[in-house]
Image (cartoon, rainbow, N blue to C red; front, side):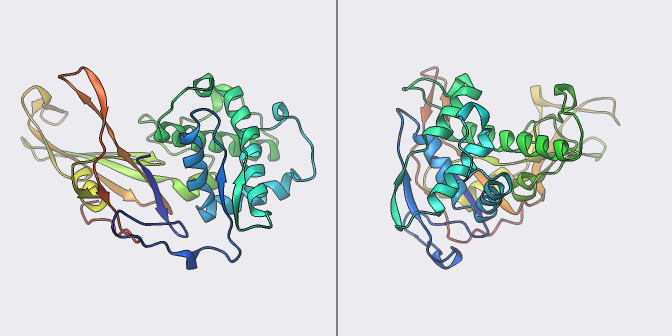
Length: 296
């Protein structure tokens, strides 16, 4: 699906280099498939990845206990997306068998009620878009519960920008456990070649989107992500110090690495000759244990 999440306690592996660290998983772990509803494979893929992200799963199972969801018989309209995912994870965790499958019908129903983008039996959604949507929805819902517990109202205008939005350079004042797991800080660094002034702008992120090339590795993709780019010609940088357009060097680097790093491999590329997007089936190697390159 072109997505992977690496971090403490998650499954890892790669083409030709499988290294699944089962010792990192709890005893009596469950390996359950999820029933597909039309084209919901994108949804099932992300749910599986998030289930095996142990910090995330632990918080959802705690959410079930805190709200007593296992004992309540609520209609789907009375549940949040967070409630539905927590119930699904709880349902898997209490299975007596080690393998099998469950039906995420309640979660998918709630998802489709919340956003028309996910409606229709034959709809297709990119997994990276879905992960982004789910994590932001979790942030919003956990934040609302924190405000409610503190006796604060949650008017729409007071909700801070999405943590994955390029405009959200300023961290949200409400830090949730979702932020604690997935949020990192990117620094956009630009150096003017005229006066040497370096301009830095920080922005938070919940996942990294990286370009891919044929026959490469995840480590190489991350090095390319942090490579220096020259801004010249029509792409010159406006330098406030020089008060004009100048040649410059630009690069992105990770200022703060998240506890769990979500990496999105950009497998769709726009082709000028066909005027359409083409899926890239490049073979990308990735190790069981990822060591971030120094360029990041």
